[in-house]
Length: 391
Image 1 (cartoon, rainbow, N blue to C red):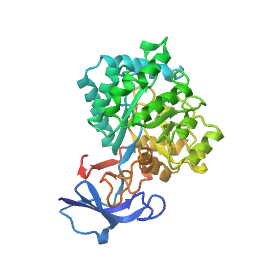
Image 2 (image 1 turned 120 degrees about the horizontal axis):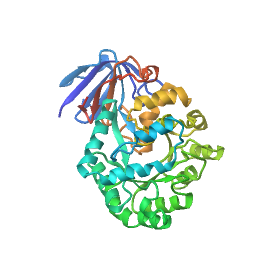
Image 3 (image 1 turned 60 degrees about the vertical axis):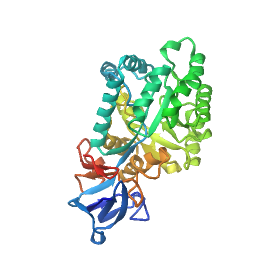
Image 4 (image 1 turned 60 degrees about the horizontal axis):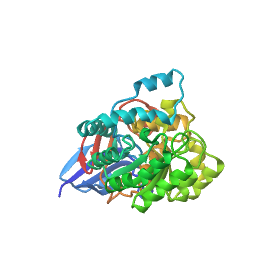
């Protein structure tokens, strides 16, 4: 049993109001004691118990490790040409996914895993200590199953997204593809996944198809989450609430009824906002202020993928949310940590409290507000994951 004390913390975000000031549970002049992979003690630095090892934070800020609850990291290739064309005036649609499908099918397992690990290390250097990732770029039984198997070797938060788009192989038979997704493909993929997801959108799956897919996934023991209302108004949010999905992700185009539904379901269904997608597609920003004021639970995530949001940076998404989505710096940080944990139905991450997993990020700044105040600056100077200093 090894203990490590992080002392001389200028500003500590715990996300536990019982430990400090406000919703962030802010503590000044604080210390943390880690025992093996857990937080053992949190409090004033002057009262910190002894430990085997000591790390001096030198008056800098410490926050919980980021919880990235929505990413697509098992893929091959990139879509530089598509991005370049879009920045030159072409609009984004769901169909571009097919380019990545072709590259992913052609890649070896080793190539897919190497690309996944490259993005994981990139994210961890920026403070992400918990991440979810999905399949969805194979769209055959074998390719979806191998994507999930590769992902499951590196995270417990794995999502079956065979219903990303209708496979090009079934372009003339979407009903047949839904049958595959809810039958043989689901059977092959369920052992590797915790979640089932569907892209409920024009150009992908309609409300009835999405309900069929999510219901089948739930019957196989997977918990629903939904790509909802990204490109247009649609049934995704209402379906997510109806099925008690853990999250409705994107939530860009919402009616008053959608907002009310998410507010009423705040304890079960999180509205996960993905500002990297709007940045990369020059689309309308989600209105975080409207959701928060209504009482919805909001998470922030990167949506890291090669087509519509090729960023692994949670600090970047925080800066976008504060600048363009109406969030305060405190709200954005909470949503990128505790909010992401809620979207994954986790209580052991996204917080700095005794018994939680020891996932922490040290900022080269006196306050978490600098994440939005100094956009684009690499402020994360040290990361602890499961009690080990990994960066």
